[in-house]
Amino acid sequence: MLGDPPVVAATSRARRAAPGPGSFGDAHAFALPSGCEDASACENVLVVLHGDLDAPKNFLRLALALNLPNTAALALAGPIDASWAADEPGAVIRRWFASREEGTTEAERSEQLRASSSRVRGALLKLRDDFGWDLNRVHLLGFSDGGTVALDVAARMTGRERLGSCVATCAALLAEDATYDACEEAPTPVMLLAGSKDDVVPAEAVRRAAEALRRRNPACGAEVKVFDKSHRAVASEPETRALMEFWSERLHARRAKASDYGNDVVDLSGDSY
View 1 (tube, rainbow, N blue to C red):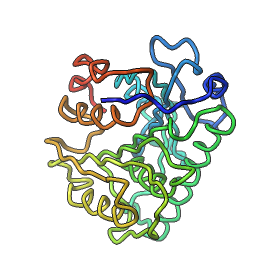
View 2 (view 1 turned 30 degrees about the vertical axis):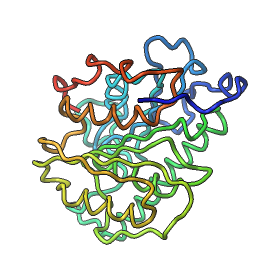
View 3 (view 1 turned 180 degrees about the vertical axis):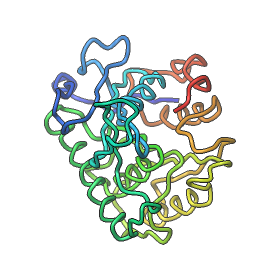
């Protein structure tokens, strides 16, 4: 259940604004939830990172379908253009790093991950500095390759840059032996969702990623939950309920109660994300 949110000055709330076109490069999407007339009325922003060879708009749709109270949605795009994979001309298709199957070396993939992670971190700092969103009101949700980026961003944003939370679904760290320097600063809370039938990112790889994050700072949590699914972002009511329970302890809200989330927002099984 949500407790009372930290005291935030009214002037800080009034500053929160919606990013305009081109604020984060040539491909991003921002939307307000129903009931919010402008960004200053929202308490949080859910930043979503798409999977490989996908479009930001698809994950903006997922963020809005989750229907989190008083929470705006921002979908960021990977830096690598993959328009060659588009089903229709002009569609925005992006990726965060190249696949191993294309002959890309692990060193090259790690370099691309660092670049993507730095790009997302820069966007989140811009969201704070230019648009008034305190970082503890910013929550990351990444799928597959986007989840790998989200985990790396969360591991690096601690202390004064600590985010409200990070969720990665069907995602692991690139290198199986990935290590981060130990960090005693306040960490970004992390939850990882895995699929028992996922043959792209097996549940064991997700568990290894969680262990690497906990070695860096046990306080991040890095809890792993495994669901009966293949390589999909959000695929069932139990999975979405786990998300709601995680966020209910971390989202800012005006005197919100667990009942505010309701059963009507947890069943996304009719859609494929």
